[in-house]
Image (tube, rainbow, N blue to C red; front, side, top):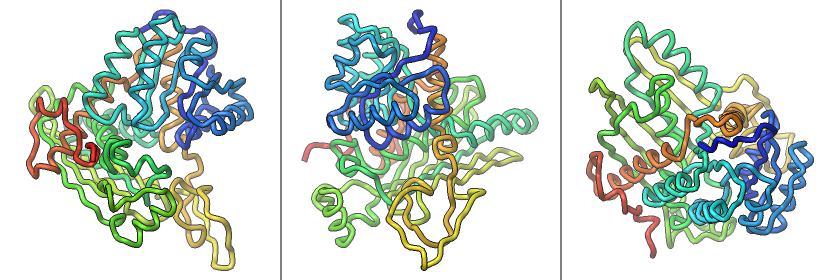
Length: 411
């Protein structure tokens, strides 16, 4: 951890100006002692637009940079948020490390989930951050969801001392498909829905099962088993729609749109805990659906993102343009619709950014670091290997160090 944390506002530099960058922009409006001082992305038009949006949100002045190394060396940013596509993240981290070695005054780096496409890439991300002396945080928003934080606090404070630790965490996340073409391309994204969404599920489940104040290393992974399938997007009608809308020939290089995984863990006393996860891009409902459960000897907790307190109804007489003004991945503009009134807060982006900013300013270690991103990637690669081989994978497995999922391998 760098000892020279800034005493004033933490000045962030964003790498990436797409959908997730704008989600973080919304979240940061509720965080103190922070500015978005710079943004760099491949599209000049999008980075200029993002800089204007940051200024309008009161988080600027934000400067659009043509290159990452220029932004890092400018002296205008203290920490960098890596929010670019998965296939760029390792190259971005290498550039940051080189810039710091050359004297760039960057103190910290945070990376959006997943940390990389493979375990080997994830380990290099961690190594580069450590060798550069950078504080590092893994941006896994579901761990910071308001429901997750409050639910875990209650369960571990009131229930666990009386009857024992929780033993089963279920996590499910589903929607109708990603926003950008690269998500649908296995070589760029690193896989399909298992990579894209189960990274959330296994880590939030592991967090719920871990005692407060302890690192996720308190639970040792024992085994992993998984099943994947193509349920919707390889059907000709939907593959054609995807090709027309995204320019992706999904029938030529499909990736899984459904995944189910089981991870067995063990604590220091030899007690078993289980993560059960399902994810899909084949769900058609109001929009993004996240369902979480935690079960113990005499208790349970549950959360569903679509069980909102606020709902609106719109009849057939009301017509409008398609949008996502009610809920992320919104699928309809009519009928009885749940409304997530504060998506950035409920999904965890606000507290995630508040935590990272606070830790980086005060020289503290975040509860989610690149080391956790590496652990997540090891679990994901074990699940992919299990799905490919049809067998349960036991930890540790040396083959995972160089494993690349079939859908992500070169054609």
